[in-house]
Length: 311
Ligand code: BDR
Ligand code: CA
Image (cartoon, rainbow, N blue to C red; front, top):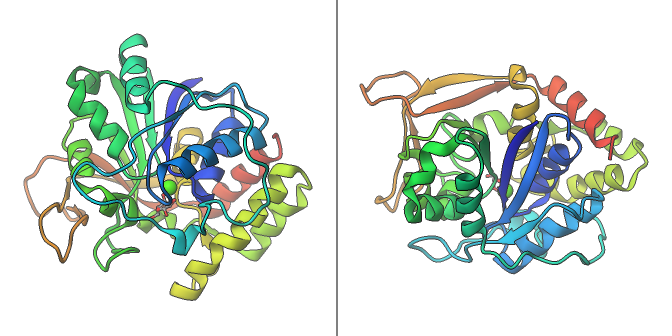
């Protein structure tokens, strides 16, 4: 299996991304889950990550708390999307498993140094604060990363937190700039693709029909999470942003995109956190990311439902 670290701010869609990884032990070995402040403050994301592990019956997966604020800015949260707890919808018990003592940034650094080079993939599902802090503190780990597969950014779909920016990049644009400029191989799941991963009613019924605690909880998370996008965009259902990352690890053939240059806006107030994606290759800036645009949505939901059924 492929060794990964999931860096996350759960979040209902983060939760589904984690469940998909934990449901796929033949292909994915989750070395650890690192929590970051984002959708809700750090104490809640660190708690929610453990709630999700317990839901999956995987109390053996170590969970670490990381950075509680972006590198250079005040934290912006998204309770308007995810609810007060960040994981509103199902009524899940408080976790009994404890957080690890090690800071998430130290875990990321230590793991990349301890494992053979090119064998650890980072999967960021929230603001890039933990990853960028690790890269800044320990530049030697960058070349040891196999790949970074992240959810963030937008191009044709522009923004969901400002007219120009996607939430994860907007919250910590300085961190995103460090990661996008790091030279590590990057695969990016922007809103352009995640807005194609929509939980229609039939798809949510399929989760619920699993009849398991996981299937029912995922359906209840979706029931809550879909409100925002339905009301705001007239969307057909909730976009499963973050599960695109873990689905890509399992079935890259479901996705397609272009290897292009992507730069992060860090100075303009108007377009702060914009992912300036050279989709048409109109500059000579070197490509630094595989920027995904297309998804086989039904293939994605078939995979997800089949895997969730295993938990
Ligand atoms: C991203 O922001 C968060 O609200 C979601 O969990 C996802 O990671 C989508 O813009
Ligand atoms: Ca997230």
